[in-house]
Image 1 (cartoon, rainbow, N blue to C red):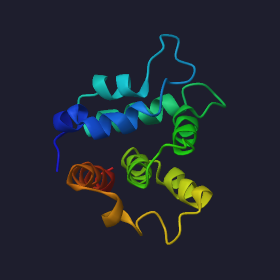
Image 2: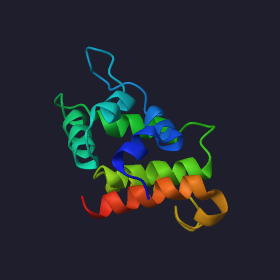
Image 3: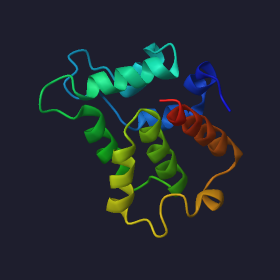
Length: 135
């Protein structure tokens, strides 16, 4: 598994976070990747995602970004699985459940996990699951 600093530098993890794009409503064009880069721990990152999701009344910044990323045509099954695990890691497991239902993944999100992931992806996934469990 990865430490937080290793996670922040991991290309696969960064690609998943980067796929979320800019934080809606941020005056300074902050991206979700900027939020990750500024965090000092998994817990700090989780708190910042939660805080930014509800920063403006009626706005669902993180949830909307995940919805947009999950609908990307080029998102592989492995990337989709990581996006769902990422949602769980930052305390948005209900969003992952909705994504799976929306995408109508046969047999559930975890059904093809071994077929869809190589070791580098699995290491990022294991880290996300560990951090989701301590949230």
